[in-house]
Length: 521
Image: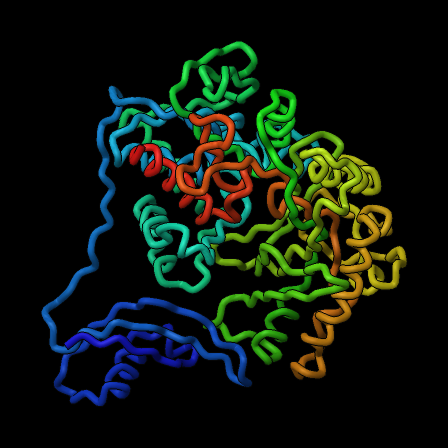
């Protein structure tokens, strides 16, 4: 007999095999003599009541033969002599595009502007310690893309747009923990992702694919509706049949190149704002309704959204037990992001808190209007911070009062923070929307309603500018069915950099779907 059922357990019970077996037996009213085996299908946390529970969806096998998990398969074809597909960018979209190529008998040839994972780590250390930015090797550019060193959250709502399960299977195949297969909010962690990315690279190379690092797309040669060649590092001309463009949301030079070459692009809405960091224990107490987090519970996260004067204000990329990191890709601009290690055991919780902006906010009405709007904010943040990627910051309460903070809380941002008015950095409409929303969020997550010592709106929280890379400010338009660019038929705009994905999983799915579309044609 095989039954699927839902179990509501205390955190300690959900961590105990014996307690799970007992709960299954009681739920199904089984006899003591009956044998139980089970598989967890989904795991989530329910913190809505006074007591926090773990919800397990399980598949229980009663008096069945011993079952084993189906082994994850990857069809590792040798594609060294097969037709080539040229892929620009070795982030999740580019890498999963390459894996799909191999399984379908195509040779992937990847060009990545940045360095490999190991060499890239050195540039991040120099940025954090000395405030020196390598514009081609940083938190956004390099093997694995922005996700490699910025957390590795695998949560997506894009089930209808691709095979989420296959993406999670492949991450597990290449070394991720199996719990990402059933966790409601799967997370790998910045400390583990580099090894997984290296394993993917080695598989691509072993199957006859190519990956070229320090290889930046600098030009496209086309006639009519067809690209004939791409130019790498200004001198290397590469003849192409089809090109997948998976350059990520921070490759502003690609948008500028397309604009100069009269290749169709469009301005699009996005969101920008700040990073907010609390002591993790405050978020734990608010979300779990307790003074001290149960050791069987993970560090708590939150998700907040509010409409302020017709604009969405929402939390973005929340990182419990995390760190704020410098995510700039251009000199004299300041961008921050957040990440967590696999154990999420740092003492702080940070999240982006951003405001939606669109074409009516952009002074420049060209397709690059949103990009210029974004860049202006990032340049102001760098200037107000004082240089060397020191970030301007305020206590949350001082931010709302528009008052320079006399002192700042300890912050995880390694280049350092400088007390300043963030109203001098952010566009007026963004600053005002954030200020109003923070007061509202404070009421939703107050110490009084959650019966805790401190609420969300607190002087213990620090706000750091600026979080501006939530998504691309430009869309590279493509056909909905074929994924071809609407102007160049052998160009396939892909994932976040083209405006069609939002995160590791959705980007990976987009890369895989494009290969399927090319093969089907």
